[in-house]
Length: 242
Image (cartoon, rainbow, N blue to C red; front, side, top):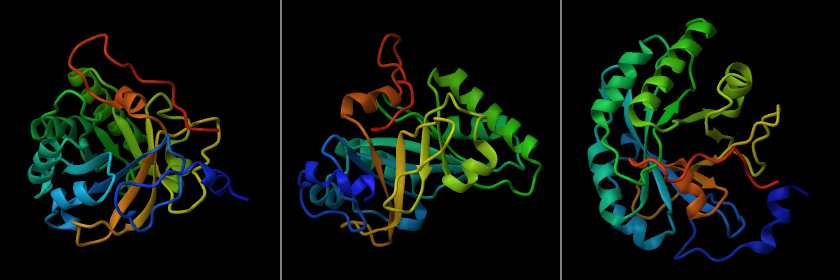
């Protein structure tokens, strides 16, 4: 029997109705969603009232000049409602990593406790792998130098295995695998966030939405967030429950 079902006895009820498409998972797990303009205008107050959403990632930028049309609205409402928020950049390997990092930094203003910036890596744009990896490295290093926090890398399991395995192993990882079976990455690499469905139904959001988990507690999640002062939570060694 798959591990996720062996753990069903440990579950606790969510506040309000479950998000359709969610797994039955242990209590020491945080539930989250990620959105962009594709979800249209979101009624975040209904989301917060009806569901136990403990974090949300929102699309901020793409390439060197695209800004998500609903980023500012989503970003502001999440802060107003006290939902832990994170911003992601959809990376275009055929463009400058430095320019894309600057574009993100000019668009997103972090507040203490926000999740670290996310680099969404899921296409090569038909450029050589070495070029893609080098420009991605420039983006990651530029963000880290400017904000003094390690970015999170988002990708799907297939793209990770074909292009990223063994390359950025020191960065926190957010993996998409639409299954009731957890991602298995090999090389003892472990993930921090798992996007397990793109068919979630959430009150307050008209279209389907991606559903995610972070396997840990709120204090553990702090370690993947941005804080301006030194001495606050530092990144844990990557890991999920065995």
